[in-house]
View 1 (tube, rainbow, N blue to C red):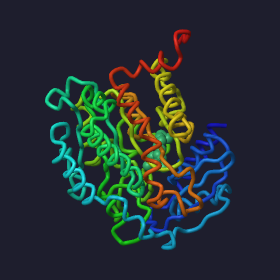
View 2 (tube, rainbow, N blue to C red; view 1 turned 45 degrees about the horizontal axis):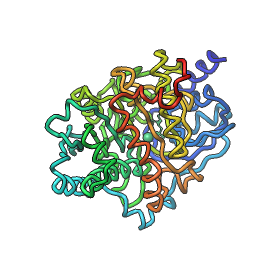
View 3 (cartoon, protein in one colour; view 1 turned 90 degrees about the vertical axis):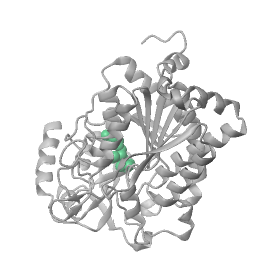
View 4 (cartoon, rainbow, N blue to C red; view 1 turned 30 degrees about the vertical axis):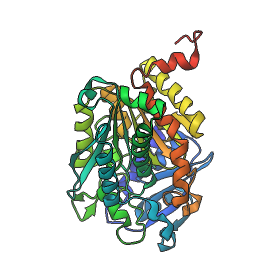
Length: 406
Ligand code: 0X9
Ligand code: ZN
């Protein structure tokens, strides 16, 4: 069964054209299990919604053609200007607004927060990281946690959460909130709200959303962009990551080829006290954990259990579905496979709201009304991760009690 699928996937990939495809299509594709979803993902499309017997995906003309030839494409329609932003979306932060907001917060709360550029993007923008701790000078000695947003350009909501948590932690601390003071005083908290500013800016620059996903690297042959969530170096180059520069899931010429992923790698490796990582994406309401490049579970039993137990606990607050990344679909080179696989950091990807694409009207562009409720429902998971950074394995005993036998 699996070999047949792999053979078909090979033919399929070979048949995908390398010409620049600018039109993006929403597609409803027949797929009933993780193997069929992986086959779909292997064409280079991005799967956005998973249902029992189909998925909804975004892809270009040649990917659409390939799926059609396989006989599994049920419906498709092109993304058009009708899906452009309404004016109400000005509540989202563009790069300059985010930078200014963070700088203002740093100026007010300089006793417990600082901000630094961790590297420049392909187009030369600074990638900002905020560090929050009640003991900034000795923060390296404290347990650390890192939150990130905005790997994917069109996932603007994933940037609004990290920005909000910076503001929340700093203002609640200043107000004297005892829980926040105790967390901040005993932890080293790192927040990188916009990993891919070039992509995020490109997505909004024309006044209409472009549904852009990748960074803005100039690839060979007049094509743009590497999928930063396929460019990390653990299992890089495996299934669900394309070698086609025109694909939305282009993995890049080599692992960590991109300035943005290089910056994250260096930053994480420079902070050896990081025990927990959370990368925000949108959408589908999921809590994902490694592995994503293979169907195998994490082989270290306690590590698998700690991911499962923590994901389940966080799901009680945000209502999302916890699962192993590869139960969604295989995709090699994502952030969390690397951070756990290489560094044994307990790692999660949240796919935020909305739950599904609403056939193009929700999805990546759900409007600004949704922002506060998504920030609120994910606040408790964020505080939980900050809390458990001292020893994530505490979660096993806390959840399963004394009778738990690994
Ligand atoms: O495909 C991705 O990079 C993530 N989904 S998104 O819609 N935000 O693009 C999910 C990554 C989960 N990881 C694996 N399945 N490996
Ligand atoms: Zn994403």
